[in-house]
Image (cartoon, rainbow, N blue to C red; front, side, top):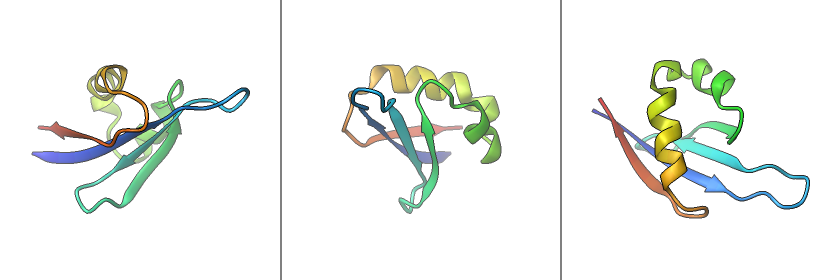
Length: 71
């Protein structure tokens, strides 16, 4: 089981929404725009998990660190 922590950051005006993806040691793995996750997720080897990650991101609120467990 792999554990990740996600934080959605709300953009303002022309600044888009972003996501921080961190590992169990809370090291930053990826920082990407919420509407363009493909390139960042493929760089860290999570391209296959993109649908599950994006579904999880649609459910969590902005500004709250949330734990995601993937098999």
